[in-house]
Length: 428
Image 1 (spheres, helix red, strand yellow):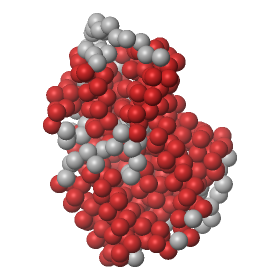
Image 2 (cartoon, rainbow, N blue to C red; image 1 turned 90 degrees about the vertical axis):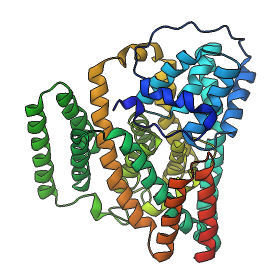
Image 3 (cartoon, rainbow, N blue to C red; image 1 turned 45 degrees about the vertical axis):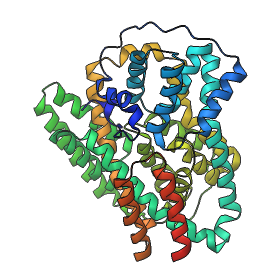
Image 4 (cartoon, rainbow, N blue to C red; image 1 turned 180 degrees about the vertical axis):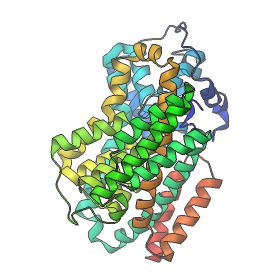
């Protein structure tokens, strides 16, 4: 399946079905299309428009994209529907939150690169401010108050359900043949045995490229050498990620350096293929498994908080930065993880439209996405073992998973998070 569809989610808004159905054709050639005349807005008006979008950004990427399309394409006709579909297809193939990248694009269409910067800033600002304040409250008061501890115990279990549902959704669109399943399985093994994830992603992309070019012998050879190398390295090192479930490797929380936070955020922002949920694996790897900035339980709390906010999911990076490095750490981590989403559009949108037509790149990205699904599976196992400690948490997890599977309304995630917190108070 094309990468452009790897993070497609079934339409939950009837009025926007046509726009989302077009994602399956996102890789058609990016023909130039006439852009209708639009009225250039003042910078303050442009910023306010996208700030308003940010304040209303409930319900995840599908609802956010539909909101933007309704106002700027259907009602005000900033671009044609055909052009919108091609631009959305491009951002589906690239890493980063598509809704945020679309805001940057529309700002640039209206008022150039500075307009794009203001639009992207306006869209992300409400989520950043709310997450910053919640992170401060969490560290200053939340865990010292028994009732809030109970809230977070309920939220942790519900977040586990949210991640399981996301893996099922992403995997269903990404693992479309036996070779992609095999790459995902290799990634699971590599992650369990402690292999650097960048190596795993590179091998996954290269392996599937070999398959698409009908070099099956080379595919099997590369796969066998990779698996053998992973097992040999594990035998020498004698450890793997599953040895560190609830606590960091040293058993102590380490303060992060500001450059370290920037590098972690930038790398995560560059590798978010297949949907915003895939960033969970990369940030958890840095924040918990390697750098020991926080525990898995704290990481789950940050994810839970982000699920209640009108913002792209990756805003939970603000929480990671705050816990690891205080207010300045939160600002640096947030800047770094959103930087690619700004840069792809403001610097290289036209070039990327041409590059993304390369079929070899499609195959490489498909392989990376399959490997990411494997990495997410292991990360999810670690997080579940940290967030589900008894039958009460297991009950919340099961109920939340059932609701998320059956109820696909825009506010389903936020409602489930709030309800899980309330149940947590009652049970814990």
